[in-house]
Amino acid sequence: MRRKLKVLSLLVIGILFLTLGLSGCGKKEAGPVTLNALYMKQAGYSEDDIRQMTEAFMKENPNIKVNLTFVPYEALHDKIVTSAAAGTGGFDVALVDCIWTPELAQAGFIKDITGKIDQNLLNDIFPGVLSAVEYNGKLYGMPWLNDTKYLFYNKEILEKAGIKNPPATWDELLADARIIKNKGLVKYPIIWSWAQAEAVVCDYTTLVGAFGGEIIDKNGNPVLNQGAGLEALKFMKKSLDEGLSNPASRESLEEDVRRIFSQGEAAFAINWTYMYNLANDPKESKVAGKVEIALMPGSDKAKSASVNGGMGLAILKNTKHEEEALKYLLFMANKDNQKKYAKLALPIYKSLYNDPEVKKGQEKLVEIAQKQYQYIVNRPQVSWYPELSQALQVEIQNALLGKKTPEQALNDVAAKVKQLKK
Image (cartoon, rainbow, N blue to C red):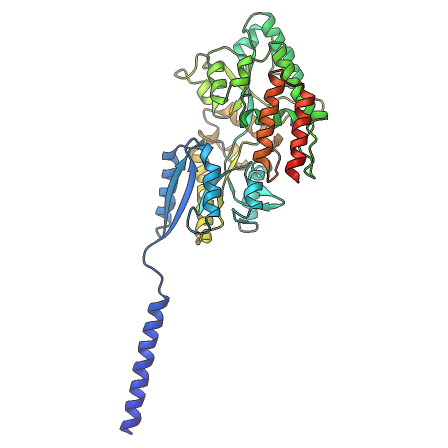
């Protein structure tokens, strides 16, 4: 009997040690999950704003720590690709420009999160804004920075010229510019950002959409060298040749546009949302209080069109913490944050455009933005967009400088597109 009890005792002790050993092996490492997030320095939200949002997230989620990295926009794309291609480690979350979504999605560098976000939430986002993180019918991130371009005008100059309303079409814009120029109110009535950079592709895309066309068709074939695409480039060249658009446009980026317009040297400017508050700030502008904003002009084929400048937060393929990363994305883009920081970037949610706190102090901007988001157009959503954009930048410049005719310049882009497709 004693022998049996001894054997039983040893068996129980053995099982106990085995259980403790197994539970010890399966125990997770102490401490929170760590996410690494990548942002750009010149976002609509400042670095301090992003840190405040992130700190609020970590306070709500003490088991998740988020490390932030900021790089210039020019370095952001390559940083994402390098991190994703490394295979291990790197970033869990990154800010992705709308023009990169097709490339990164097709390469498998960002996670497909289709079906993982409440559909009611997605239904409250402007479709054009949501398209910044969509590709081939799938969702690859959460919209976060919402932006598009608008027509800015100096209402005092228009009043002196006898022009009662801002132009509704691009032809009307040129007609108004001629009146202003002939009256000697400003030498060059219109200023654009047409430097050989992504900026000129944004304006060209806007004009192509306004004239009722597209750059690349649904099958990936180039159609920019005919119809609306050719009409848009001819319009750009004509406005320069007539002295209606400032020749400095060919070397200007968006900040140059803001500076020239804020000096009172232009009646019209095409620029992003951020310019509205700055151009109306006496510390930043000589025309503060005279600046108004309007829907981008259209044509007989389209009421309006404006380029999508949105950016979204995406989960990179190498993350080991997809669930926590998704939670972070949804927090950063939630309605509370979008409302709190609405003076820096207008919300992605339709429902917030009726919120008194969002509208306060920027009523006109919110009113126009709510309409403009119905007329968003995307730059070509193809995986080889960076090469296409580079070709467009070069050839548009060639046309604007008179080195090539608009027809020849766009034929050369079309030939490049056919090579890229192969």
